[in-house]
Image 1 (cartoon, one colour):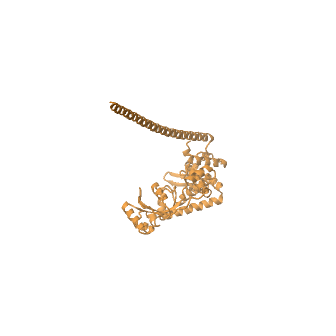
Image 2 (cartoon, rainbow, N blue to C red; image 1 turned 135 degrees about the vertical axis):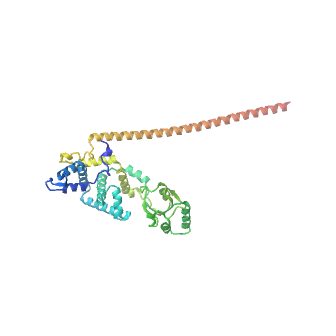
Image 3 (cartoon, one colour; image 1 turned 90 degrees about the horizontal axis):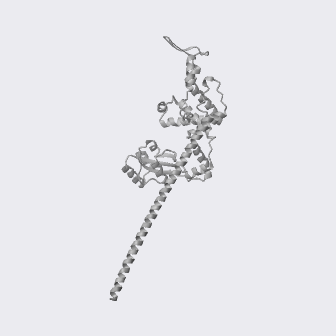
Length: 376
């Protein structure tokens, strides 16, 4: 069984509405008809059996995992995460311009409604926080992250379609024009233009164009780019609004830990292993024989773990070998260049020696000739 099939955050369907339908249809004895017609009769018993056969494992898996994750974070924290999910969805709705527009986006993304999507956000938060507790972060990882760390900064920009327009706007800024007003009047990035060009707080993980981010990093607080910055979107004039200083390692440690954990949460193999351990620790016993395999795609057996460990070791060895070969190749190239340089120097020295020898011989012959003439 491939690990990629074991745990995909986006693959767990939220079929609670299907489950509710299965539970609420027909009479309590499960035998009444839910659909009839000429020669047609579908009973509630048939419907529930089909729903159980088709969706039972998926729904039960989701329900079990959600309860386990709630146990992991605690009821109070689970309530907070649910409130956070609601707030995030409300913010998204405002961003898209209202419920109707948001529902259109949801439908195109495979979600039935806002409640469906909001529960998915909540579920992801539960899972992430539960798994995060078991992710280890070493001092070495923190130090490396600190060395590479650039604090978030606040930046604004004006985006236009051509270089000449950008240069003209820079000239206006040089003459004292207000950056925010120029952004509102000229920027083709309408979402930031209404805020005076502000993109808010950004960092290396914000998904900004690399050229844009690099140019922004070079600016001091209050400065703007004196030449247009070209990207695939057009020509930018970038202004650094706020640029906090990098704190000490101690000051930045907690934030760096969060960043490292967030990065590790994207490692599907690591997450799958932790989720498997969490489920195993809760000693889940599925009573229904028809749904005994509901957690087979989540819990990793010892044999599967051994196979995964072997694959990881093999991949690590291959990576180390490739790195060694690359280093050796680089060293050989360096030595080759050094040898060529030495050879050229030696050749030059030999040429110089031969030239000096020839000149000396010629001078000696000339001196001998002069002395002979003088004697005569």
